Structure formats: C-alpha cells, structure tokens
Length: 409
Image (cartoon, one colour):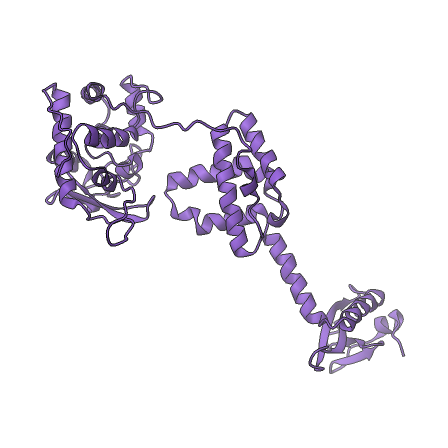
C-alpha cells in the first residue's frame, strides 16, 4: 500500500530501525531516535547490484517531493545511468563551478605562481587584478567569460588614462586563464583574440644617461647628499655594482664576504643564485657602513629608517635623487644605473656583452646548455667590476679617461 503523509507523520520510533514502503523502490527509514529518512532502492543498470539512494529527511522533504525524486532517478535508470553516480557528478560540477570564478582562479594562480615573485612584483600585480579586473569579472565563472567581457574591463582602465596598466592587466588575465585551462576551469584563453585590441603603449625605460660627462656630474652630486649614512652608502654603492635597486636594498650581511670581495644572494626574478664580485671601492663602502648596521638584529646592510628589522624602503634612493635636484622621470633613477653600466662597459671599456649580461643576471645560454651559471666568466667579471669602479672614479675626479674600444679579454 502506498504511503500517506498522515501515516508518516503518525509513525512512532521503535527500539530498532524500521521501514515504511511506498512504491517503485521508495521507502522511509525511521530510527530509534525518531528521524525519518527517505530512501530509494534500485539495481545498478550495469552490474545489477542492489544500491540505495538517499532523498533527505522528512518533513523537510515531503512525500510528494520524494516521489518526484524517485521518478527522476527511474528516468536515469531507464537511460542506463546510475542515479547515485550522476548525483556525485552533479555535486562535483556545482563545486567546481563555485571554485571556478575568475576571482577564485586568480587567487589560485596567485598561490601557485605569483607568490614566488618578489614582494614588490606581487604587490604591483595583485593591485592591478583587484583594481582593474575583479570588479568586472570576479564573480563570473571563468568558463563563461568571453573576449568581449575582458575587453570591456580593459577599456575602462584605458579610458582612465592608464593604457600601460591596461596592457599589463591583459597580460595577467591571459596568465590566469591559462592557469584555469590547466586546472580544468576553462577550455580556452580568450585573451589570445584580443591582440591589437588596445592602442599600442610606448615602452618607458628607466631614466638614465649614458653620456660620460653627465654620469660624472651625477657622481659628484651624490657627494652633496646630507641624508642618513645608510641611504648615502646605498646611493654610492649602486653605480659600482648596478644590480637591481630592490636587490641592493635587501642586501644581507650574511651574504657579503668582504674578505673575498663577493656578494652572493638568490635572485627572485630569475630564480637563481648569483655572485657579484666587489671592487675595492665597493668593499671600502661596505666596510664603512659595517659598524653602523652589521650588529643590528635584522641583518640588513641597509636597514629601514623606522625599524632595523626591515630593509630600506624601495623609494629611498629615488627620493634622495629628488632631494638632490635630479629629475627621476627624465634624468636618472636607481634602476637606470643598469643601462649606464651595460652601455659604457661595452661601448667605452670594450667588455663583451655576454659578460655584462651575466653580471646583470640576464640569462645567457652556455656551452653546456644551462640558461644561467653564476660562476661563468667569473674572472672576467672580477676584472670588469674593478675596471668599472676605477673608470667611475676617474670620471668623478675629472681625470682623463682613456677610452678602450677594443674588446676586453
């Protein structure tokens, strides 16, 4: 006999679990504690093995709803589909749909890729995502976002006068989509069809001059700096070694070997260990700052002004330049010394480009197929850094500098 709501409602729990049957495999279980759960009994369409499927608790799921769910399961069985396996598949699809929003995939991409980059790069990139992309794409499933939606978000940024940022946002969006494809949240990267959709942006290089007299003038200006010894030393060391400003400000005493005139550290940008030979002038500068910072708890060669536990701020060098009257947009930035060193070492002092590029931690394949080898050309690089320091010293003093345009051995 088919069940009725009255019969189910009036059913009292017993000492042991018991069942009340409806029809076509549907029944309800009543536990000793009084809970009433709908069950559907069926045979697997492939193996013939008996299985059970739960439809929820009564009265949350009334008799009418339980019968509808049974009928839906029977339709699946008629098509050769196991309703239990189908339910699990639907749950997984629903879960992945929730996980697969643009914001969720962006956060997963951040954890897998962005978090391995430098703190400054992380901050800059995630700021672009949160400001330019998430407000427009964040809640949308990645698999449903098309090229036009992405372009709409990018044009909002471009119309605010942030063309370079819009191009960077497009690049990052592509990286997020490709991560989504690998993880199964999307099947294509729609940014590939947006090539040329944004107006071209002019590449802005870090301000720098490669004119020797101008370089000499800057070196002399540095002597007029009246700020802290930490910033003054970092400012004078930068031209001598011309590594990235972010790497110099995060120099640690534990990585500096003054006896052997070396600085060894891990370059986050290229994910490789690097060795920087130090000229006698660079060693002297570090020896002078050692009594002031070597004993501090943070271990930084150039600690921050507010706390020794943090390194010098990333804007300290450029701020010092501006205090000295140097225009950091058109004349010189801390990063600009890399271009100065690269150009003058080759054009004025004749050093081979591959030796200079190795010093700059740019990838130069070697004969063994390695993209980067921190000890390659080490003797040439030691000589190069001393010749460079001597050259800058002569420039600064105004002494005549013999231009050696032949290739250095």
